Image (cartoon, rainbow, N blue to C red; front, top):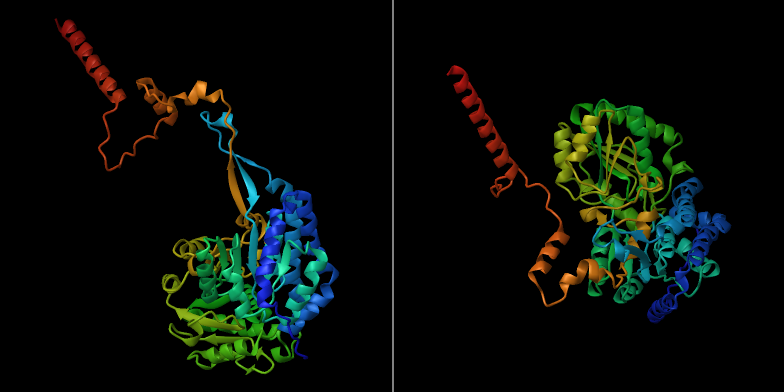
Length: 514
C-alpha cells in the first residue's frame, strides 16, 4: 500500500493558530446556543458526507475492516452529535442552588460557562471517535478548540485537516498536525483545558506542561485491564466476548481485556473454549481474514513481537508476526506468571494472557499489586463472586459479562482512576469537563433589614444571637463519638418524673397499710 505523507503544521504557525482561536472565542461567537448546535450538527455531517473516504483512510492506516470503523469509530460520534444537539438547551440552563431560607431571596444558582480555548490530543486507535467526540462536547460547552490528531495515522489525519475548515467555523476550530516537536510547542502555550487520550508516559508530560499554566486536564490513559473468571461461568459466552474485545482493532483499544485470571484447575477447560471460539472467528486463519486489523506502525509491531518472543508462557493460538506488514496474529498465551514480559506493560495489541491463580482471593490480590486499570471485567452469574472482586479493587469501570462496549452506552462516561487517568469524556459528563460552573446570586437591599444587618459594625450582643440563629442546629451527636456527650435535658425530666411517680406510689401504699 502506498505511503501517505502527512503535511505537518509549521511550528511558527502554532502560536498564531492558538491566538486566532482565542481571539475568536473572546469575540463572543460561541455564546449563542443555536450557533453551537449548528456546529455540532456539522461535525456529524462532516463525517457522514465523507464516510467512504474516512473508512478507506482508516483501512490504509489501521488495516481495519469497514464494519469495525463504522461500529467503533463513526457510530459513536454520530451518537454524541445526536445527544448533544438534543440535550444542549437543557444542559446550559442555570442550575438553582439547594433551597435555603437564609439565602433564597438572592436567587443563588450555577451558570455553565465555557472555559475558553481548549486543546484535544487524540491517539491513533480510534482517530474519529477520540478526536470528535470530545470536540462535540467542547463545542456544546461553548469553547474554541484546537485538535491534535495522531501523526501515526497519516491518511486519516490528513483527511480531517482538509475537512474541518470546510464544515466548521475556521476561526474557532483548528487542527494542528505534527510529531513530538509540534506537540511540544503546543504544550508550551496556555490553554483553558486540555483533554489527552493516550498512554501514561505522555500523560505525565501533558500534565506537567499543563501545571505550568495551572491548566485543568482530563487524562484517559488505559492500562492493563484484567478479567476474572468464575469457574461456573457460561464458557461460550465468556470466550466469545473476551476474544472479540481483545482482537477487535488488533487489540488497540484502551478498554481491551489485557489478561485473564482463571482458577488453575479450570485453565484447561477455559483455554479449550477459547481455542474453539478462535477457530469460528478465523476459519481460514487470521492472516487471510478480512475481519482482522493491523497494528498501526512497524515500531509498535516490533514492540509487541518482542513481548511475545520473551514470554515464558505457552502459546496456544497465534504467535506469528510480520513486522513489515504490521501483522501480529491474534495470540492466546496460557500459564503466564507474574513478572512475565507480557505482564510488564500494556500490550495494546492482539495478545491475550491467561494467568492461573488459586482462587478469587488470589485474583483480587494480583490485581491490587498493579496500577488501577481503566476497567475490571468479571464473568460470573454469581452476584457474590462479582461483588467480591469489585468491592475489593478499584478501577474506572466495573463490568460483568461484557467487555469494551461502555463508551457506546448512553449516559455512561469513560474515565479512569489513578494511573488510568482522571476526568471523563462522552455525553454530559464531557460537557461538564469543558464547563466552568460560575456562581451567580443577586442580593436585594431589603435583605439587610430583615436578615443580614448583623454583619455590619458596630456589633451588639443581639447581633451575635442573630448570627447563631442563621447557622442552624448541628445534627445529633454520635453515640460513639470521642467527646463525652452532654447530659440531655429530657433525660433529667424523665428521671425526675420516675422518681416522683415512685414516691407517690410508695406514699399510697403506706396509707393503705395504715
